[in-house]
Length: 411
Image (cartoon, rainbow, N blue to C red; front, side, top):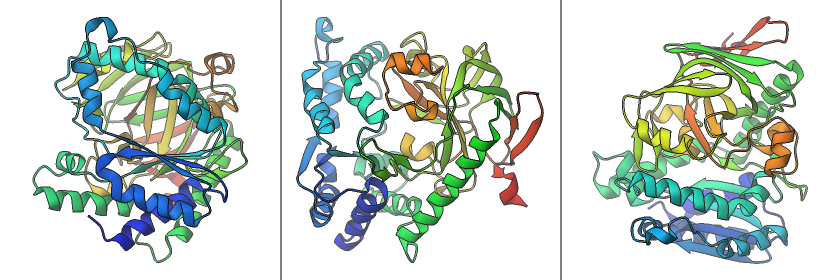
């Protein structure tokens, strides 16, 4: 476990740079029991910043597995929505939301895939009112990593448990620039660079992106109303915040009906404890029509069977490699980190702000030309071997990334 001082510095960076907690604002913290030291540091930091109240949602991920394996068949598709109502009321009351990502990546390994898919769909339905509010940035929110022994064991299986946990903490701290001489200044510079990149792409108004690399020849049409977003979001309460620490991406909304070609994943993907490797997807008319994988294909198929829009894209993100996440040289087995290692796509739901929306319901997304699926599955397609072009409406192409790096940054 990191020293109390180091953990507090991490918590303070998250609260000030990520969440941008405001004086007098309530805060809801969510994390597992194993993350209590960080939760305490976050609560301490929040009160020092003037939080009106700090409420902690402490949970045990293993209980979620029991709910999938042991619940009777007749109740498997029922996840009561009343447990979500407290979180909905908190958001409506203006409470900031900070959730720790700290679970065992392989917690659900071995669970019956059919039961898992049904339970996930039921949970998505129950959580929709909350997720729509968060997705539309009704309040400032943050997803933040916390090392736990189970997660560390999955990432560093060759190390003793204590050493693995320490290594994971150090990796997490490196990805958020905690050891920079002035971490907050480092983040101001980083955020400004990502904002400038998104602004340039918005001025360019490309009609499509083209990816080329080993096993990849893909054209991703962009939604007519697409907006490029970066590290910073602005909540409806007027607070500017960075919803993910770390973050290395600029991202936008594809046209879910204009994706053509073949693309090969460049990094493994963890889906509910199943490691998917060598994923290769063929798109036609925006839909994934052919799937191949060296391992874990059925897990992907289960996600894409969730609803009719799941096999279509809802996000395309550009990430320069190398970067502090990519440089760890290790798969984190956690989407918050792994998606920031390289450029990526996401099957399923679009983010409302990438379509210029302030509402996140299905009707608004569909009307804006976005994907309104209930799922969102990120998978990595970028690497130092992948080139990216921006394609204008007349078919002219402009080089954006060469061998994983922004063209202008590589000169």
